[in-house]
Image (cartoon, rainbow, N blue to C red; front, side, top):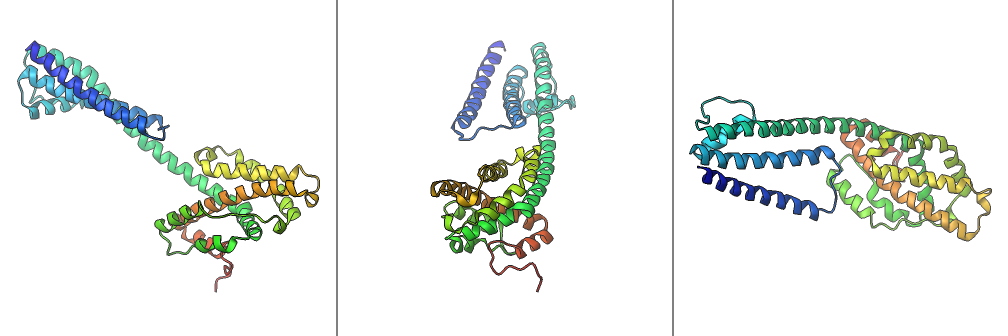
Length: 306
């Protein structure tokens, strides 16, 4: 019997190592690291739980001379603390094995349940935080973003080409937004420095400095890296303009430098605007309706309902 138990342990140990090795290789090959500690803990508990099921089932079969079905059934009802009693160990070694199984298995099972519950609560909290973040993004576009897009559009000699795919309507689907988003990554955003009205742009952005600072202080922004990058780019442009005594008398090289900052903001701004429009369409039809009527890319857009 002892030999059978040792053989079963070796088989189960080999299977467990195989499962763990496959999981480890998959993680190594992954290009992105999982930064969610709850998910990492859950995976560890699941691997341990699977090992206990495999090891426990094979061991119980060998010790108690039970079928695969009875052994798996016993292991599950034991670690789940159900314990109907219809299947139970009768040998001393089987009872000792059951004690060890209870000590290891019950804790692991409760660890799986606890982490699954924590993950569900975490996802719910994240949805609430993201909803608040979308409200912050909406305020940004109301106060700064939409006006900046209108101004940058006047600077862009390729605007007619860019705007073609940004006339958003209520018929758009998620696939439409996704297709346009991919297209924008290869779009030729440009800034013609002769078209830039430097003083009004500087006055507008510097006047919004306090508003932008308050947005950057919002801890919710840590949940949305792309929008945070946009705010940093806008705030950097504000500083570049504010540090110059007279933006009307800038040398050509300096104007080209600031034009690069404008182009960076322009690209990030359009991408974020498209994401925000999809959010409004999916969740707030009345706000989406207003956003369509004030679409900065639609030259025919009018806030008046006709």
